Every structure is written in structure tokens, then in C-alpha cells.
Length: 507
Image 1 (cartoon, one colour):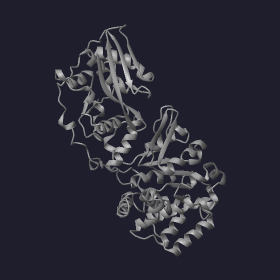
Image 2: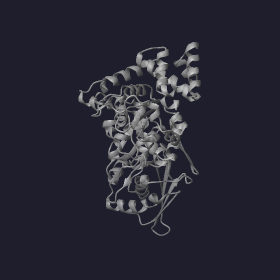
Image 3: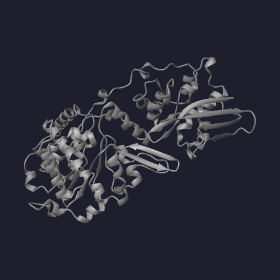
Image 4: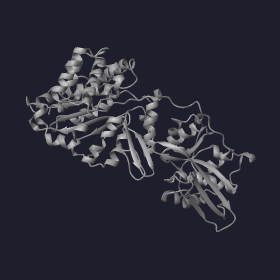
């Protein structure tokens, strides 16, 4: 007898259908073989499934079992298939009745889960992708571990059944337990339900001095511009960079789905209390290129993708390896990571706001020229191609000790966040795309310049020897500054301020 169960193959952040066929034959030794390009974890599921089924109180069939994972030419990885294999074995053995006997049609209920030896079901990565696949393929619903129900409900407009153990799965498929109404269609959460913005303990007003840097993070938050902070140790670079995440507006529903899809593919825990909060990732400078941008034998999302629709902070950028810095060029420009392997190509989303810091010289105190404190050899290590992809360069000086004697002053995080949201709303009337992503005709329409202003800007760029990419980035930053001012047109003062943030281009 052959039974068929549906599951999925995780390809990047997207799921592909996997059909699991279980054949129970009276001929041959009572063994269990798994075919269809399984990895070690899938091959070991034979022992996990056998022990879990017995400990759950079911009789293991004393016949030859052959499990086929189709399509057979695609590699299967991880303990995802424990639960569907167990369902297929029980259905083939008659322990789960078919539709003719009052049971449910197993093929219509894609499932995934790892089995413990006592028969309980553990969460697996990629549940969000499974829910999206089930919705796309018009399945009856999905069956996952009870701990994954809230995560699956983000996407699925179908019933989501959470099972604690094998007996719960078998009971549901036998038709004994109906789908709970609260887990069915029409109860998917909306983005407003998760708008629980809780600012960090650090407020912008507590950072003494540094008005230029505070202005830069406000502009960066409005347009999604990459930001590079340069200054001596202890001047507040890291504090200002960390405060940026509290200036961003909450994520919308589509952004939440994209972010959680990446987190689910990476196997990170689902946190319903912070769904609308933009991500903030701070990889250490010793990280490898694969951990930073994604990769590995079985490609997984890297730190850049885990910060999707959020902030990637690279503290002490020159300390990162040259290979890791060079790997950032594609995500910074294309907002996508492409990992190519012999078995195929995987793409991970990477629409991030990158904030990097680097130390300048101690001579930035007092009235020293900010440009004089940047070591040219450090810039050569980072590379002009990477530096050119930062829209805002800010040279910071050490704060005088006397500034710490005065009470906190300056704009608060809450007030700055309100201005950022107002500026984004002002720009949203013009375009739904952030200013940092404007290009070509869309940039020309969003930032029209009079002929004299355009000629003056071109003259300054030629004088400084900037690239064509810098020409576009200056206009994007100027557009964000104009949005902060509530100006429909980009004026000369907006362009002048945007040019002031291209410090490293002058070295």
C-alpha cells in the first residue's frame, strides 16, 4: 500500500513542494529506506520516526518500508520531514483511516515538524515559507508544531493546525478533532496589532554635542540612506548609530511578512511582541563573508538579510576583512544577495540601511580640519567602491568634557521620530519608494532641478572629482532634506547641505 503526504523544500526564503511517498510492502526484510537525495539529518529520521511512533503507542509495521522524497533530483535537508514521514507510515499501515472511512485526505494538509523520541513535535525553520506555499497551492490547511502556529498565521489564509505530538496529528487526520475557529481563515493578524514600538533606553538628547551627526541620522531615517560616521574613539559614534533604529517608523504588514520569512528561513525564534520593530543587527568584525551576506554549502541568510527593512550596523568598518567588505557591494547597491552554487542560485532580500563607523585621528579635537584626521590607507582598505555607496559621510570631533557638566539638551528621540514620520508621509504622496532607492526617471521626477542649479551642482562634482553615482546620491539626500522641510522642490540650500555630507569624497 502506498500513502502520499505533502511537505516542502526550503530554497532560500521560498518553499517548493515536496511529495513524500511511503510504500509498505510485505516482501523483503522489515527495514526502512529513504531515497530522493536525503542528507544525513533526513536519513537519520528513520530511527527518530520509528522510535517516536512506538513510544506514542502505535504499532510499527513489520514490513519493508520505502520512503521516496520527490522530486528526487533536489537535495532534502534537515528534520523537516519527520512528521510527514510518520504520517505516511501510519496511513500506509492503516492506523490513520482514509477519506472513505471518515478521515481527512492527508495530501491536502502539508505538514512539517521534527520528532522527539517520545513522539512530541518540535518546531523547524521555514514554517512561514510552508504557509505561503500552502496558500499558493490552495491546500486545505497546514499541520505544524504547536509552537509554530502564531508564526504560520502571519501568512496563511488557510486553517493552521498545531499539534503537540504524533497522537494529536493522527487524531486530527482521522477526523476526530475539528479545526479550532481561532486558527482558521479570516483571523490573520494585521500590522496595527503589532505596532508596539518601545524605544531604547538611550535618547538622542542624552548624547552631548554632535549636532551634525544627529542631523545626519535624521536624514538617513527619512530616506533610508547609508551612513558612515568617522571620528576619534569616544566621540559618540556607536551611540548615535544605535539610536537610529528608534527613529524608523514601524514596519507595515508586507514588510513584516518579508522580515519574518527571512528569520524563519534562518531558524530564528518567532517574537510576536517585536514584529513591527525594524531589525537591528551588529555583526562582529571577525565575521566571515558568508555569515555577513549569506552562503554556505546549504545557503542561509546572512546578517545583511536578517537586517532586511532594518539597520545593519558595522562598528569599526576597517577592521572587517577585505573579503567581507567587498562582499557588501552587491547588497548596498542592489538590495539583494545572490548566492550561486553548482546546485542552483538562491536570492535573499537585503534592503537595509547600513550604518558604519570608523576611527579618525585624535587630532580632530578643537578646530582641526576633519578631513585631516582620516588615514588615506584606511580608506584604501575599505575601497572607493564601498565608500561611494554611503550617501552620508559625517566627520565627528571629540566632545569637550565641559559639555557633560550641562543637563541633556537638543532634540529628543520622540520628537525626531515624529519629524521623520511626517517627512516620510510627505514623500509618500509623491512616491511609495524611499528616496535612497530612486533612480533614473523616477529620481528626475522626484528631484527636478532648474538649469542654473543643475549646472552649479555638476560644477561642484567635477571640481571634487566625484563619480556619477555620487551625483545621484547627492540628489537623493537633497530630496530627503527637502521632505524634512516640507518643500515640494529641491532648493539650493538642500543641495548644499547634501554636499556637506560627502566629506570622504574630498580626500
